[in-house]
View 1 (cartoon, helix red, strand yellow):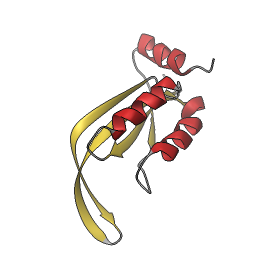
View 2 (view 1 turned 90 degrees about the vertical axis):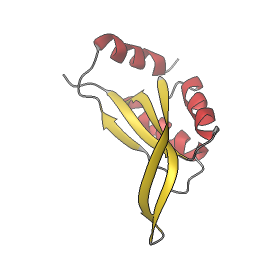
View 3 (view 1 turned 90 degrees about the horizontal axis):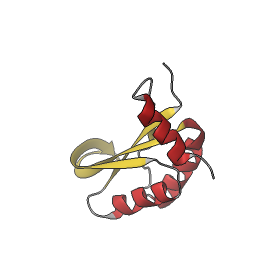
View 4 (view 1 turned 180 degrees about the horizontal axis):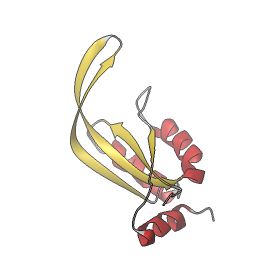
Length: 108
C-alpha cells in the first residue's frame, strides 16, 4: 500500500538546538512529530578528513506535499553548512497513524 507520508532524517550536534528546531517544525505544521535520538556517532568525510563526531538524529514525520516547505525551513534553521535532509517514503503503516500525520500537517 503506497502512502504519501515521509520520514525525514536529519542530524544535529548535541544540545538543545535540535529540540528548538523540532518544536518550530511542529508548531508551523510542517511536521507531525519529530523524534530526537541522542547518542548517535557519525563517521564521515568532510573537507578531505575523516571525522568522528557525536550527534543526535531527528526522525521527522511529514507528507510529500509538505516536504518542500519543510526542507526549506529546516535548511533555514539548521546550523550546519550542509545539513542532512533525507526523505524516506513510508510504503505502509498503521492507517490511523498515517491519517494522524496527514491531519497534523494539513494546511489550515
